[in-house]
Amino acid sequence: MQFNQLKIPTNEINLNVVVEGKGTPIIFVHGWPESFYSWRHQINTFSKLGYTVIAPDIRGYGDSEKPTNVFDYSMKKITADLIGILDYLGEKKAHIIGHDWGAPIAWYTSLLFPNRILSVSGLSVPHSFLGNAEKPTNMLKKLYKDNFFYILYFQKEGPAEEEFEKNISETLKIIFSNSDYRGMTKNIETLAHQKKIKGMGFLDDMINYKDLPGWLTKNDLDFYTNQFEISGMRGPLNRYRCIDQDWEELEFLSNKKISKPSCFITGDLDPVNFMLLNSLKLLKNDESDEELLLNHINSNYSDLREFKIIESCGHWTQQEKPEEVNKILIDFLQKI
Image 1 (cartoon, rainbow, N blue to C red):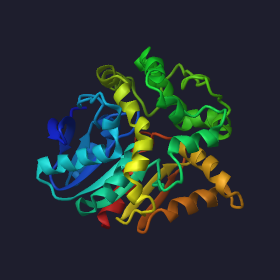
Image 2 (image 1 turned 45 degrees about the vertical axis):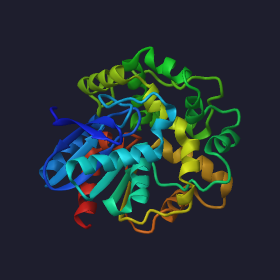
Image 3 (image 1 turned 90 degrees about the vertical axis):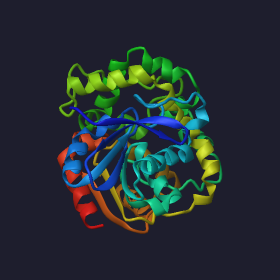
Image 4 (image 1 turned 90 degrees about the horizontal axis):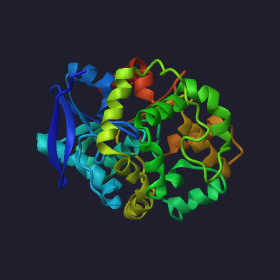
């Protein structure tokens, strides 16, 4: 696949950005460990429908610049990067869609720059308030205690980078294969009950499948591998290391609901659902799992117009189920 990639100066750095089509802009924001390429099934589809598709490599990824300071990966800086792209392209407003880490980036872009966002959609990760009484890392330590939790593992610079960069291709293959529908079908009990303990690595106990999942070709894996061989893992992991800084800097938004027209899409076996449920059950356990999840998600939006759960889908939503995701997003956007 060939895409029109531009180097765009924004917010004092240069980002690699795919820009395709003409019309109302849509910003597509990728997650970890991905790149603009995670939207390969959406870029051509939406550009042909009369939208300007804007799909950046977030700072630290691929061919975008990679600041060395951990705190250069804060939510405030990354959301400002996206608005800077709109400024460079001469666009006043845009729809924004994010997956994984890209979803919170999309949610917070709509909160920090409401006059620039027409609608906001998130895949996999719903909006959650940061208005907790203590820092996120402290809360996670209390929640997971002696169990392994990847965000806590990522906090220390070095160990995760060393683990992942030993063999980038193998790392990505394992991560992608263990969090999709096939992988989650096998791993659901382990993930749901958090049996991994502190001191283990991220990849420990994950299944190293011999074959690639059906939604990921060898060419896809090779593209991702090349991108992370260029960028390394430090910049992408620094996003996780800014969660306490985000908590402090975004306190003024701590109880703010998403007010823009919103769409949320998740897979029925997305591991984020299980992690979120584990947290919610500590606060309230008199509801069913489905009620807890639905009520929590609905409570964080004032104009949630679409909430879809895609069957037979894991974490890599728009890659595993591109046709279903595209239809939901097209229907949502056409009603704005």
